[in-house]
Every structure is written in structure tokens, then in C-alpha cells.
Image (cartoon, rainbow, N blue to C red):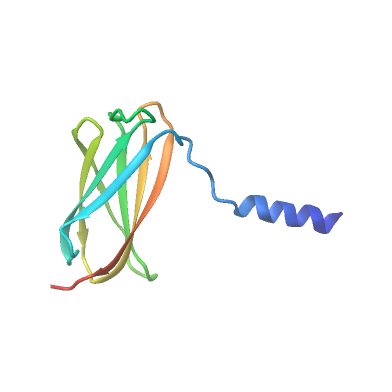
Length: 123
């Protein structure tokens, strides 16, 4: 019984948390391509289940190198049109990066998304 309870606790504590906004569609992109050291633009489009733009969200972009030991970079996205958000990201080193999108909708629901940016090229 103790082993079964411990196993259940481990499985439930390791499970990824579900987004609180499954009715929101997220399309993200990055430019320019190929991505190079320096500033790039991350674009995020948010729409609801009916395809309507989702406005007034807050999006914080966190950029981390894929290997440990480097300090992360942060930026905040601005809404450029209803449901369209843009954020500059400064890739300060070549290599593989992971961008985490921390999205807070106007109603307080939170969404987390990950973008893998492979092979950022040195200049």
C-alpha cells in the first residue's frame, strides 16, 4: 500500500500542468530567418475558439540557452493589432535557444508555451 501511494504521488507531482485556456489558439513565429546573434522579432497571434483576436493579454518572453550556465534574456511583447503581439529578443550568443512565452490573458488565465530556436548563427 505504501509503495502504491508513493508511486501515485510521484506520477501526479511530475505531470505537466494543463493550460487554463485551452480555448485559445496560439501561433508564434520568429524573424528574420535564419536567426542570427542580435535582435530578432517574436510574433504571437492569439485567437479564441471562434477565430476572434484575443486582446489585452500580457506576454513575457524568456530566452534561455539550451545548455546551462547562461543568464536568461527577457522582453515584454506589445500588442501591435488586436490579438497580434510582438517582442524583440536579443540573442547574445550563437547556438540553441529555448523561448518560453508566459502569457496572461485579460481575465487572469495563464498559458505557457515553448519555442525551440535551433542553431542561432553567429555573425
